[in-house]
Image (cartoon, rainbow, N blue to C red; front, side):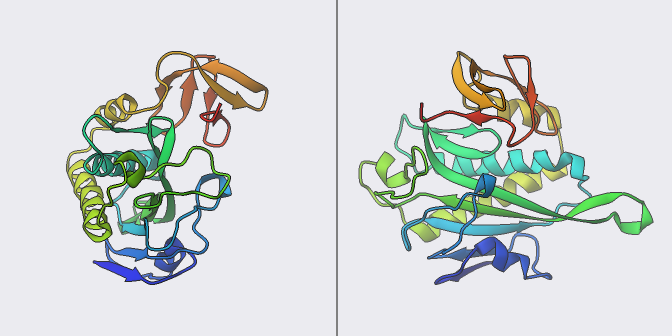
Length: 248
């Protein structure tokens, strides 16, 4: 079920208030006034031009240590959905952990927020009770005024041809749910990790990064099952500990 609002502050905040919403429930908004991005950033979206939505997932018995599997599935599903509306010869890549790019330009941001609960049946430990995947995809917006580096959109990649929003939204959500259902039925973290790594930005060559010690050149060597990133400088990073300097 997809509920479309004319306007709201944040689709993820709206969805978080729906305690009894079922797996797969979606709230989308034509205008989002306080959309949240990674690292506490806001998300710029011209009203009526883009997809801003949040999708509720209720994984079955997923341990918190496996939450990055969910992130990989969501990012790959969305990347494939965007590929389907891009012209021939253009394709998406994933910037760790889950931003979606075309070349060195950002076309989609994803913020996944998990809520934990005790494992059912008195088994002990915690599981992910629900995940809210907040998604912003730049679709028909042609001008960007925020200071976010290197934004792009489907229309800019398509030479000015618009994409119908409602069918695109349905396809994105269907892919996320189908990909997760297939993975949950037959989980294979190693195979998922290989597929994710093959889609990543900067897995070869030398590229600019920055950490607490300053700027350096490197490439991605591996991503662990928990999402930890190892670079060719020999260091391993958690989210927010390293930056990709894609605008340099």
